[in-house]
Length: 128
Image (cartoon, rainbow, N blue to C red; front, side):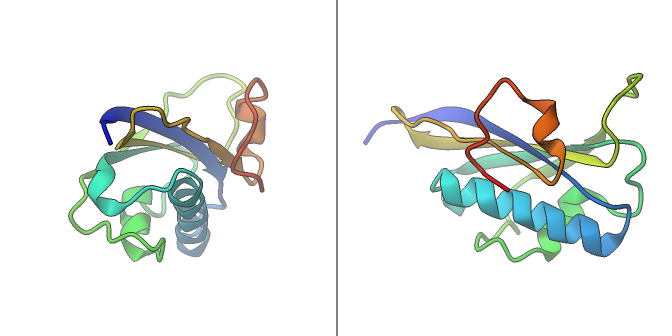
C-alpha cells in the first residue's frame, strides 16, 4: 500500500513534577500511537513544546522513560518552549508526530487532561 507523510498533533496538561510529566507524556503518546495505528518504523520524528511553567523535565526525556509500546530509542526527539502569550493555558505539553501512514489515512488527534480547550473546533478522537 502506498504511504504518505503526515503530522499528528495532540496536547496534554501536566503538573510540574517529573512523575506527572512522564505519566502524561506516556498517556498522550500511547493514545496517539494507538488510535492512529502507528508503528516505530513509521515515525520520522517527534517534536514537543512545553509552556514555561513546566521546567523539571523535558518531555522528550520523559518519553524515553515511558512505556508506550513503541521503542523510541532510535526516533529523533526534540523539545522547545512555547512562546509566552497573554492568557495562554498553563502546564501544557504539545506534541507533533511526523509519521508515514497509508495515503488514505485519517489522522486522529488527542487533547487530554484539560488541553481539550486548546482545540474546541475539532473532535477530540483521543478521548480522556
